[in-house]
Length: 262
Length: 270
Ligand SMILES: Nc1ncnc2c1ncn2[C@@H]1O[C@H](COP(=O)(O)OP(=O)(O)OP(=O)(O)O)[C@@H](O)[C@H]1O
Ligand SMILES: [Mg+2]
Image 1 (cartoon, rainbow over the protein chains, first blue to last red):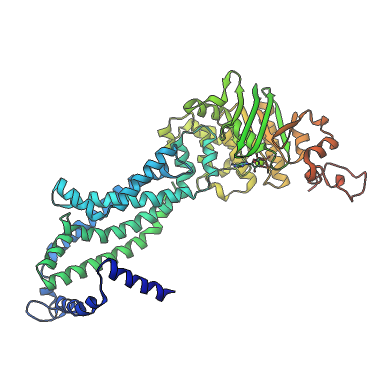
Image 2 (image 1 turned 90 degrees about the vertical axis):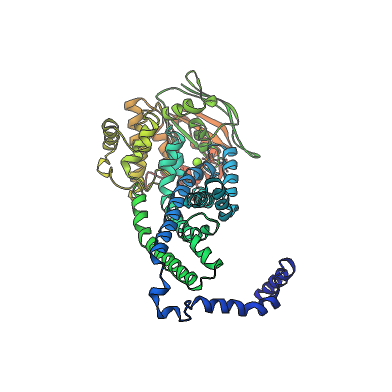
């Protein structure tokens, strides 16, 4: 079964996408060669032999990495806030209006289907080079994905508390606030933190189109064949992403405790 | 006076409520009885407008309840409080916050959303809890309470709505006998001392006979009995409940038991 699936995939890719196994074998040497060069300094020495030389640009790179993190953070927060409000409008079980729900769903779909890089490119053209374009791209993409996830969480709630609050004559948003929100807040926090982890990775790439952050320097290093710079920046990104994953894992439970009490 | 006139509720091909006409004078304690699936819950939910009727008219005084929308509809809901079989509290929130939902129509929405209740509102909630003997639980999470306590929280929520009618949908169906009595006594007290109309769906005929001024019997969505509890003889009840009558009326009425044993003890004795 698995083997059949693999064979079909290979056949399809070579026909449709001009991906040919023979080309892959012929050129794989180039890739491993490139990989080897990443590990050598201009002088020819292995990068590990002279870390100071390898990370010569650490000050600038740390600043750009910080910019990437801020882009991811601000973009996630903006997207999550938007998704928070849209989720209750979109969820079929609580929506105040069926048509509004449909419109919001389509909108979220659009926001998450258009790749983040495309949004980033459009915003760079509109607002110029820099992190502003990156923040907007991250925010819109997060709005789309979190909007869908959040509304699915809302669709799975127990409706009895919502009916209980509504039956007193409370307006819709009060019924959401007290009937629905306590049931969904911890899932919302979990999804938003997960999205933040993903967004850190995505933001690192947004610089490729000039939308701010470490990606700009990474792209330049790749294009200009500054081999050891590429590996230095990649190492910094990997370490940062790992640290973020550990950190969000640590604060997740505290954050959930905090929101559940309100 | 609450008036139902030819009220119908259609779910797809099924008529859950099939042309019910009924007048309920203010201050009455009405029991609605009938088999499972006879349309009791559907009827009560339509009065509160949690469900919209597909036909007929519901009036309260000169208000056409079926035509209400927006704020006027919410005002109506505030005037006719609802109590549910499963309590329908927000389990993760504390008891007092749950009770204060009863003021959510009257207080400005922004204040409610931010939980900025006035001292007066809090005092109202606490005294409602106090009158039901559970004020000491005010700060506890609602889902840590026993069923009987939760239902009393729901009654306190209904009380601070300052309603004219309380609709109770099998309020004691998930409670033990002792809590059943506590909750039914509370409803009776509210009815007698504040003159609030109570319409209560019940499964047990003993309770219906004990607490209600008037009984209304439904079968397959139609009104088949309307009269004083005394008029509901075992014979009528058997017609009303069909196969379920053994459960409802008591073991003595079921075949195979000693004739002449006391009927009507399904719940009271347990
Ligand atoms: N949302 C719904 N969709 C479709 N059918 C429904 C819905 N709600 C109720 N019904 C049907 O309407 C009929 C009446 O249901 P209802 O809940 O009012 O009965 P009930 O008298 O309250 O019964 P019980 O004593 O079991 O609570 C039932 O046949 C039920 O299957
Ligand atoms: Mg019912």
